[in-house]
Length: 319
Image (cartoon, rainbow, N blue to C red):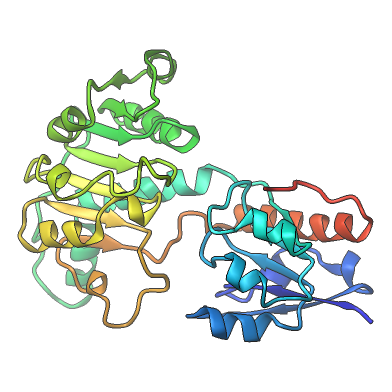
């Protein structure tokens, strides 16, 4: 009897097409789910008969309570090499091996700039107006050259976002709790003296931090109040870093020029969620990692991980 493998959140139904799963054909039956399971009861019921689960990023939590309800589960493959939504201790206690995959920084860097440029030049507003026979030129674009880009985080992704900003002729500054002068100089940007200074002086602010106890809620109402009324905020990192309600209030009241957001407290967003209708917001459905090259890496490595697990030699173990 073949083992059963579930692929979660395969919204585009491409998981079995974008990688070659044929090496597993004799041993594993693969089922893709193109919808998100809203609660643990529904998810536990859907996964009860599966031995292997492939999950995308941190969209689905695997706490101890869920793992206890999946007695057949033996292998959990998560895209990327870090996942805060998995209880690794519980997985080990239940005999579940957890493995990761390679992940590229390029797609989120590119999406960050798609959002930033879209905001700066009013791309969606102008495109919609053109299609709907609306006003011919209704916005005045914000310049990038000579303006200040402030980065919260200067790691693998933030560093590459900085390089693009420099290529546009922007003044680039960065801040994080662990950022050093040496790292800032290596990238060629200024180290801001404080988070507050960075926010107050920047024309564009982009978030590139890992979510943790020190970064959760890092940008709240007080921090948003520091931004210029002409400033734009972009978050392609983790939603919990920016207080969602505070951001909505700032957008509704016109206290900032706009925001570009790719991550949300609830995903997929409910139909009536306020982020779907907020003014001055350019929003995308968590597309930061959704590119062909990344999917090829994710699912190709998932196949390798499953084969290695079946051979008794797990690859890329997490936990």
